[in-house]
Length: 252
Image (tube, rainbow, N blue to C red; front, side, top):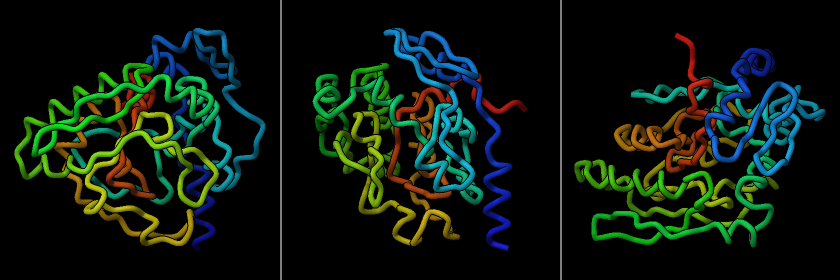
């Protein structure tokens, strides 16, 4: 039964993949995109589909391409319904694309980092964020809006951390924190799937304490939330405007 559930998930869960999401999400960086090729404005070209096998979940997460990146619809809004099995919109990532946008290595990435002020209950702190694609401006605006929330919500924006060049735990894939486009909040009181599950395809429950008032502010400015993943990471937000672009919104 478990194997059948896994097979049905892989076959049926991947249907959203409009290349125009990239053009709309990164208008200053992406020149064009279609079902064959994505071209950056500096002339860099990427195949929309790669030849790596993607028949299993492990293959999808370890060998995602530009099409796979968009195939699960990120549904922003006013809910925190537990995601369905292996539904991780935005977690399947094509690393060469992000390296081309934000920097091919640590040295190149760090050249694009700037400091922004992030409000706390006791004042403010400086956080390093990339200036590429307006990620720094978006995160600064988010902080200003969060500062106007009631204290009971604002407390969940404490303990913020952003840039850290590293791989994701137990993988060789770069964390999105490595590009300076991710932020973690309230790390000591939020939830992470690996605290419960032994493997990517394990059956796990859903846990979350991050208030939707904060989530909605992030999504308004082009950030997605790890609490919308089956493999939940409720402290985590990352700048992924392509997933929130008009062409990637679900047709009602």
